[in-house]
Amino acid sequence: MDECLLGLIMLSTLLAGTSGVDETHVFISSGEDVRLPCNKALCECKLTTWNYNRFSHLAAVELIGLGLKKDTENLERLSLGSDCSLNIRNVTKEECGVYTCRLFLNDKQLGTDVRVYLHVLYVSSSSSSSQTISAGLSVTLSCQLYSNAGVTCDDLVRSEGIELFWVNQAGVKLTRSDSRYQISSSSDHCISNLTTTLLNEDHNREWKCNITQRNQVKTSATYTLKSSAGTEVSRTVVRVILIIVEFAVFAAPTVILLQIICSRRAGRKDSQHSEEIMINTIYGKNLLYK
Image (cartoon, rainbow, N blue to C red):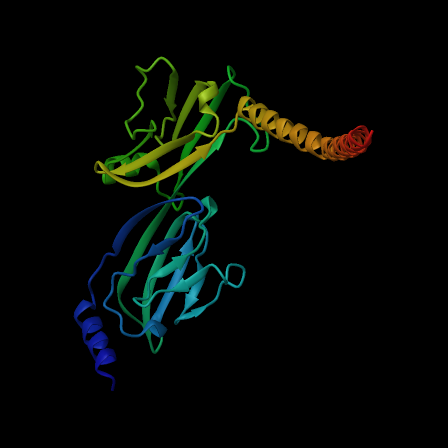
């Protein structure tokens, strides 16, 4: 028998009767790639099964079964790492929940579950994503932590020491004492709202929301607002460029025509000057002979 499998069987025997699960919390921003660790010294990923629960009252969905992908809908976004971790590309807020890693050998589970809680941070705006905002108008940005699977933000605040907050461009935490920003939070600490009146210099500015776990930044979510002032500036630049191009296109023939006329006139003057020289020369010779 393979030494690695023998080691796993021995480990399973030692852990037989041991209760509890190994739990890990992972925080990620929507749209990023995430790695969910199995936290086991695995030598055979074909023994690995990954299950997913979004809501605690629903049955688990098998994503990976004995090393093979089972979720055909997200087939391209899921993969197993060399350490049997579960990798998800371009994660969405709907994929928050609990992911469970288990080892099976001959239909028998080896050891205990490894449970990974995936929390996804997402920022949205009170305005439509396709709508530009004028300077001077008020806008509200909402930063929300999606968890589900029976885990609330209150639980996370107490057990994991998490905090959700906005920072300025220098990375300094925004507070309610700043008169330009109105910051409010939901009762369960899952949502932080930032309301502000936009300035012209806010065009294309990146607004950032952080989440910390025991004072360590775990991930950030950003949102970029486009104001109509910036759009008008861009349109003005485009209009100026178009005017210059049109002027160049229509002016070029005129310049060429003027060059031709001037060249012809210069040619005529040179011709007339030559004729005058010849006449004067002939006339001068005639005077000598007389």
